[in-house]
Length: 226
Image 1: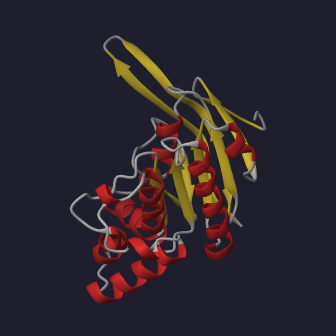
Image 2: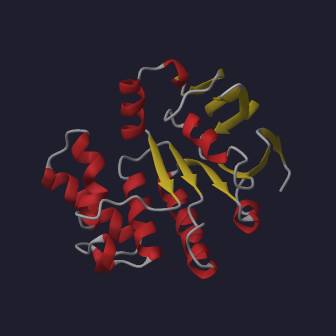
């Protein structure tokens, strides 16, 4: 089943009298359960594409259809609802809230969607145990290692059981061993939760382990260039 289709997506920024073509006629299809890698150097447009796929940014032209709806035409409120309920985000830098502990950080999307504190914390605790942090439930971000913080961020991204996970350099801030552990964790979670994923990375080893590979070069996307 097709989950997401990006068609002829372009993104242009104006810089004085000049224009910068960040993305040029990008086409991408993601099926349910498929894990896609997008490889590219810094400045190639990877993060911009990921933001457009998740409704955080809008294309200058083209469409992004997610589960039958063109999210580029949605209102900000509609896309915010989709992101909170059906699309999970993981970033290179975890973006955890420093004043909240692990359970509270993971439970936040559930609280935003209206779940009770008790139920949200119970579900967050279960997911944190699943990602290997049973011993870190009440620790704050500054008390966790880099790998542990990323595990909390993964749990938060999956707490609403999204159909699609968007990951922007999820292992880019970690050493090789910890990065491999995070990849193995995502693989095991994929089997359990059956989410699709688009993973932006410069790590060829990680990219080659995913189902489908693309390369983004100067705003143009090509398949199988890993």
